[in-house]
Amino acid sequence: MGIQDYLDNRFSRIRDFYTPETEELKLSCSETDKVRDVLPLLAEPTQAGLAVLDKQKKAAGIITERDIVKHVAVEGKIAAGLKVMDLMTHDPVTIDFNASCTDGLKSMLVGKFRNLIVLKDDRFVGIISILEAAKGRLVATTTKSEDLFVALSSLQEELPSSDLKEDTNSVFEIFKKSGKNILIVTSSGLPVDYLTSGEVKRLKLQAMSNIN
Image (tube, rainbow, N blue to C red; front, side, top):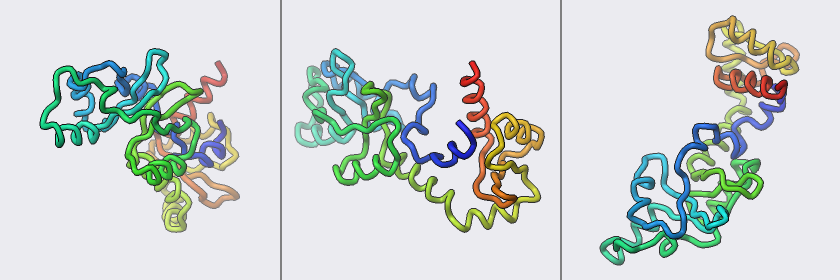
C-alpha cells in the first residue's frame, strides 16, 4: 500500500480497528453457553457485546450487557440454567471488514443498537461499537479540515516532511532520522496530511510483508 492509498482510507474503514492483538480477545460465545459464564466477558470495560456463534462458527446472534440488564429488570435474577440463546438477538446485522465506518454508523443508528458484528470473507472477526464507528468517521473528517492544514503549515519547518508520492521505505528513513512523532505529508511542497509514528511503522511492516 502506498502513502496516498493509505491516506485515502485512513481511519475510515472498519478494518483499521483490528490488529493481531484484538484478534486474540474473547469476543464471541456459543448459543449453549450459560449467561452466568459470559458475564465476566461483558463486564470488561471495553466489551459491551459478544457475537454468538453456531456450531459452524457462523454468527447466529449477538448478546449485549443491555440484554442481560433488561432480563434482570423483569425477572429479578439470572437463573443458573439460563443460556445465551434465550437472551440473544437472532439473525444480527453484520458489516464487512472492508466497509466504511460511516456505513457501520448508519446501520447502528437506523437499527437503534450499539454493537455491530464484523465479518471478513463471511467469517466472524470482531465487533465494532457505535463509539468506535463514530470515532473513525470523525477522524476521517477531521483530517480533511481546513484548520488542520493551517496548523500543519505553521509546523512545516519544525517537523519532518515527505512527498505524497514518496515510497514507503524513504518515508520510514526520514521519520526515523527526525526523532519526531509526526511527519507532514506534502504535495507540490504544500502540506496535505500527516502520519503518526504508529502509522509510519505500520506502513513499513506492510511493505516488508509484501516483499516476503
